Image (cartoon, rainbow, N blue to C red; front, side, top):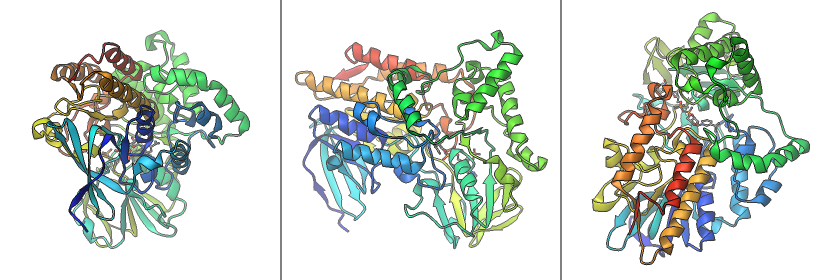
Length: 542
Ligand code: N01
């Protein structure tokens, strides 16, 4: 294995990540005639949809808004099979896009970006990579764009004894491509977020015994997931022109928005009827197109939370188990709400047991399973559905050094700072997607926000290159500070800021606790457009 780096021919732009954002970024920059190189650690394209091939993985966004909008032909020809596509279908879609637009020739797979260092004398980045076969290379680039996804850096809790376990331990985001045969096995799952819920409801019928280690119970909405036929797809396509216009201006990048009525103006009967109608839709519309005050007003949120708890309670036979599954430490919708399909009924099965980690915390992983303060749970396979170091984790795991050797990891270790989640002061010509203080970091239908950011970045690069003698673009310190203050002002009005979750960085030890995602896709896009219209006001072009 060689540690000596060989230099690759210089490029105009390096893109890190070949998922939804990275593929589109490559397409957009190529349109401008730029020489681009994309690197991805994975052996295939797809990003999140490459890695998260655990049992039951599927989108919680409906297919008609979880796609690219740039190609009419793609929209006309790609046939979504169901309302909420499974992982394999979404991965197939992204592979189809890579092939259809001949993107692969500029993508280097199985190659991790290990560092990126700004060279002020050349006004360029030197990017270092390590391939899975141990080969080290460097490439010089004018622009560096991170398309690493909001939830891509897995968190593996440091349980003592982890390495002594004789069975198999796997994080859901590192599920082997060939799958794991769980039939007839004793399986443990730690974590009951969106991922844990999908895994648990899927594997419960096939495993011999399933032990769920739950720290915090979650609200979840039953998914209604019809298969699509030709007539459904024709109707969907007829709506695309309207949908395509609408997604950029809503609160979270879907084609629906909150109920325009004030809660106080609606009678209790009408409120109930509205909630029942949205619940029956079987989608995140219950969360995102209900009464907007539920995000801000504790009393209104309490009523909504009671409604959901009542829906959950009746599905579980044993009241003692039901009590453990009902969330009480946070309000509905103040962290990511999962969709589920038979999840709560899983706990009526005789082969499933629920361990409440508040009653009996995990003390260690042993040779044979998990030990809690109350006893041992023997296992063949332990699944960690323990989440991600969201938004910042993928970037701080790369050694990125800007002006004066400033390290992004150290910089964000003290205080997370970005200008609209698009640039960081001190890091010229670095553009970020799904970084903190943009909706793409957390509170958005990812494809909507990622496409919007990629379009903005592409336009900005085109603008910089068109300015005579201009080589660099960098957010000013003042603009960055102004944006963060604006972000915080909105974020701190919401109940989201009071709930512990990956939305606030509270799931990662030592991470600064603050709302990561800008709230309001439509407002964010308008602000981005305003900066652009004012010749990138707040960004210094030198
Ligand atoms: O991660 P999470 P996720 N001991 O952070 C528990 C996207 N996604 O992978 O709540 C015991 O939500 C933790 O417990 P607690 C989606 O955006 C999308 O489920 O911290 N338990 C929690 O239960 C989603 O929001 C889809 O008390 C520990 C769980 O692990 C995001 O990914 C599908 C623990 C982590 O939940 C992340 O979801 C799936 C410990 N030491 C996911 N550490 C789509 O539909 C953590 N936990 C597109």
